Image (cartoon, rainbow, N blue to C red; front, side, top):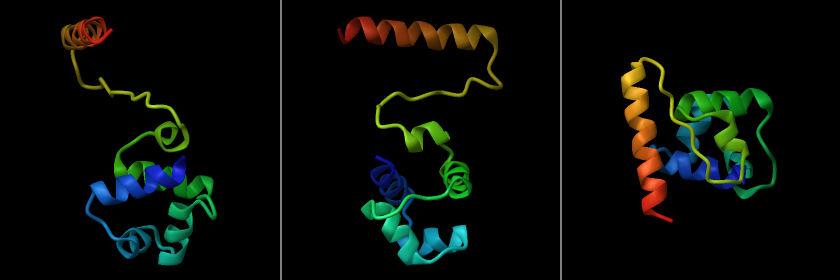
Length: 94
């Protein structure tokens, strides 16, 4: 749920509701309402939250635990190594 994700990301980044509100140019009560599930952020704020916390909008909106990793700036060899590690860990954890 987006409410839980916003609160989790805010706390992981050591921010108060007031500090997050100030960064977004909104009221603390708006952040509180998002975290309580009373309201949801508009598309504009979902994008701003994703940029602020360096997560995808999908991460904020989805309920599953799927995570993406950006491989931009990595070589083909680096990407091959990462996919090999992921495959190894999946086999190990079955």
